[in-house]
Amino acid sequence: MVLSNNKIIIREARLSDSTRLASLMSELGHPISNEDMLHNLNIYLANPMTKIFVAESDSQVVAMISLIIFPLINRVTNYARISSLIVSTTERSRGIGGMLLEYTEAYAIRNKCDKIELTSGLHRSQTGAYEFYRERGYKSDQTTYFIKKLEGIE
Image 1 (cartoon, rainbow, N blue to C red):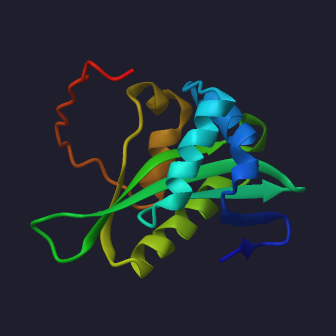
Image 2: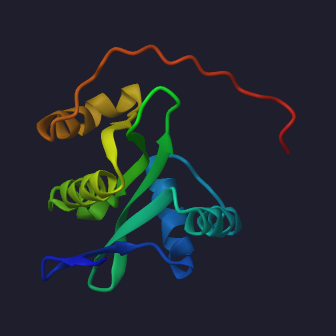
């Protein structure tokens, strides 16, 4: 499915987008090589429970959002997690991030998700990201996440 508002087109990512997606990740502060992005994109595209949607302006990818859908053992519905949302610094404040969120939320609903979560780094509160999410109905639930870095992965 492709959504267009005459200037912005939202569509699923393609392998040919890998270089631009790697560049966007670097803008967010998460550098990744083009080769690693292509590898990860192959995995996402092969898995029906993962999606990457991109926003194009003038035939250039200017933003992306990645989504993971998974069942939980204690629920009948699925759960969705946005693992990244990036709008190029040159394209911010044009409504593109909001369009990507709406598109992704609609996709999650069609796939039987009743909740969607995302995380945003503490330093992003200074950039307006927190306010952006709150304006779109996202609330901090004050959940404490416990994270452990696993060793032994090459």
